Image (cartoon, rainbow over all chains, first blue to last red; front, side, top):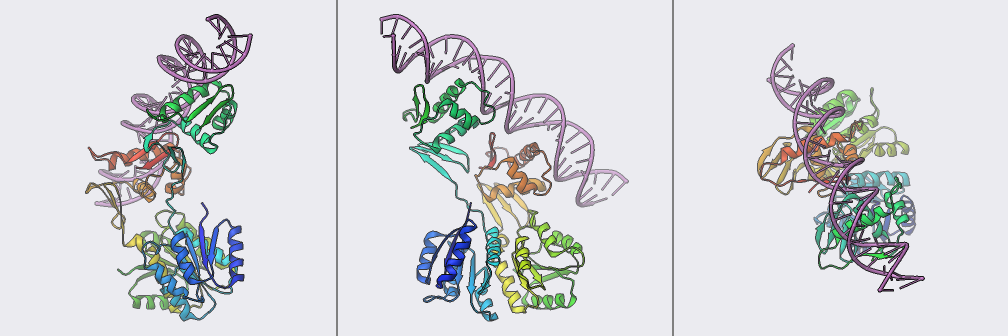
Length: 226
Length: 226
DNA sequence: TAACTTTGTAACAAAACTGTAACATTTAAA
DNA sequence: TTTAAATGTTACAGTTTTGTTACAAAGTTA
């Protein structure tokens, strides 16, 4: 859920300050102290937001900004310009270069944070679907779909939860009691044998014909995904 | 091509100044000198950008801002806060209320213009590429029309909003609670079963005979556009 | 105002899921 | 090999979840 923020800034104290504080807010922060590295890294990492120093030893922030904004792949990444100069022409030039906001050094961290939040709020929620895999089994939690060997299989709610629990710690053996606690959670007034039936259903659904068994029975101990 | 800008500001000289200059830049400007009229007009006119005075005779700018940002129909309209106070708390509060930018009075017109342009540039996608498609379903947000296989279908307001929300993250499954939060936003004192009924209506309207089902039911999880 | 649209809810129908019991099969120890 | 315990399998009834319809209240428009 937390956003990736990239900083391009040559003054180390400022990097330290920003990184320390953004880290504390739960953002993932990376940075570079020059423009050339910065632009390369940004194109590789595709951060959710960029803090860009106006003055850099090699390329100016404005150039980086223009460069990014004219490329479709990067133009939607919001950019905040950091500038030491308070002159108005600069502010205007900075924004016209395509930056989404600017802030004048020295700035206070609360203000920077407010601007960062405001821009992140505007930018699209990322469409990364978190998928978990085990062997040739794949769970897409976003779409709540499960695949075995690229063919979708249908699981009922309990089977889905059960599988999701197993896949958290593959190969680990869980007793029926543990499964009741963790998957059934509330109403634990359920026979332990019920689990056997659900295991059977889960097996039936995820075992396409010809594929190997993924759920191991450990006699007098429980089951595991293995 | 030129954007509509709405100003809510009680000091007449400032309105005159801004309107005169924005007019000259080719923007269509309307305004009101109090919060109550402003909020009503904004909801009617749906401007592309709002300039909002921090201090107003009736409702505060922050209140207006919050009011607009929590309603799906208006929350994407960028808002610039105009504030006479330079204190930092205010800046932060302004941005946290959901405003996209702020500017401190007295400001120079070039600076205001630069900010206006920067925000309009960001929101452009929703103004220009204004049709969204998914499979053979097409939504034209400008005209608020929806097509399935090139034939127009009629959707009620809630159905339209619901579909619009789904299409933001296609294939993703949303729980009834999430849908309530995001589509109903305000009155969340609504039965979750109500959603089922709206889903049914939406399905009925977008499923021409012979076309495939686009809304997936995920038992005990929710619905998705898929 | 009257006609029409939209909205939320309740009530019932249909479908999917769950737990249990009963019986079958496997496993391990005697 | 026999036996008992553990697990696999199946069928079924009860429960939960979702689909569908109708209706009244609230809101809009002519």
